Length: 84
Image (cartoon, rainbow, N blue to C red; front, side, top):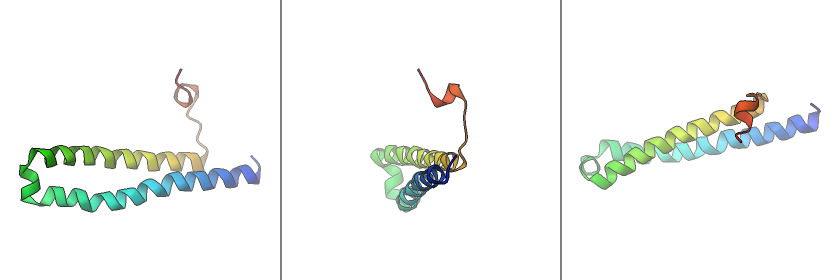
């Protein structure tokens, strides 16, 4: 792998790593409000939004991990790289 490809991989990987973490930092205070405020815990709409928010937060963590995999140039094998 030449240095240009390594630099592009590092830049792309850092982008994939940092953007979801920034979104997660913005998302967590909102989730904490949903968890801690009794009014939000009583309303069924906010309960559903809390569940969706937790799943979104987990998805952002997984996206950040994929950034680490891009930076490390991990090969997951043919089964996981392409799904036909």
